[in-house]
Length: 601
Image 1 (cartoon, rainbow, N blue to C red):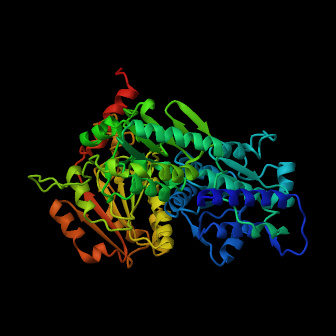
Image 2: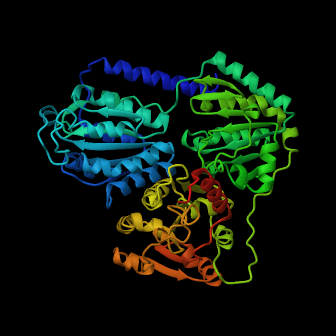
Image 3: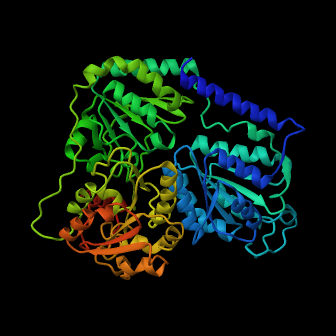
């Protein structure tokens, strides 16, 4: 039996053991408080940080968190930023999850945009809401944080109904006898389906004792095994199409290859077959960008011409974990017909026009690789574009977008965590090769401006846990103003990110000069004293700030060893032209503008 099959079988056995455990009452096991049971499960999932804010409905649980030996409390400035931080933590610390704790009503609603972004982009985050006691939930008094308008029937479940729209699973804890199984259920959904889950923790149940027996059984992170007969048929069909394509095959990797933990399976497929490999924007760094058969980023019509030609002319495309959103596909300009595409997903496979539900890529990809291994020699003869970034020779000293991104590309090091804000940064960095084992973090689908600041906090903690290198943030001046408070939390916890603030005097993407209203005042912002910011937030002795206005100044700073060593938190204000933007962003804005089709009045 193959290793993937054995792992899936063991996961299924563990699931069944947990179901049986729910039906049994065992004596002799160590009693444990419900709050500590939850923390024990999070510790098993390698969680070391919990984000959020204290509130009167979660303080009892917070005592347990603060006393926990391996899970640290990270107090955030607001719940939205806390949710962003949990998202960033989960993206960087693969095989774990992000956790955010809020209080009832006001806290959880403040976090919901961050949770929605994690849902949209398939990031495993647990949202714990401390809620009133079970008695209060039954009697429904007009407590603070309730809506206060007499709607007693829904007064206490309005927030649950909101959470249902942005979480894949919910556990509403009301009974100590089912608390453990409910906690296990939502955590299993979180890690297997790679999306947020929601759990309420009533004040009167946090310290209630339950059996700890279930903790001996690990939670399964693997999906159910594929049906072997259907799987065998799918493999035959794939092999047949590859043969018909005469090995003129390319592999296109996207976000869900990262979210659903198939990096190693994809790496085995690309190295053993030799097929050329490309990635979508959301799949950047899913495979090594230094791999000799890696050709760059495919974004539909806004791709570089050589990449566009190679991808769209291939006779067969093996698409792994695709997420076909507008910004991820060049405004839906993928020119890849269904007749030439095989799609691998976490819970289904599509072979041309045929869909195979329940045939997931985690187990399928190794079997496909074994079947296609013989194609390697022919496949390696297919040329791949050279994915490099050349610094342009411009006849001025202005820091242009075209010059900036290739130049900072030379500053990156292996295992760096690189966080790029929606718009200017996320588009500018797409065509820049990132070093070996680096991690690219960006919110291309949800696109909530300011997300990167909280996300950088979580990412920096995760990078520390994972033994990664520097955490580097690229954020616009407008975006940073939304969530700037979390820089103080970074300072408090001794984190040392390098923060490049792209000062182009306003909103280039959101509201945006390049989408609409290029000269409108609503795209302008107040100009802050950026180099004084870290001092104001408490970082006078542990921070350093710079302003660079020319190419020479920026290059000199990037070449300074003490700056590159990132021994303290550093902020670099980069002065850039107001109406400049990366090539890909300009093209995407033009396509989006046509789609929005505003009519002049």
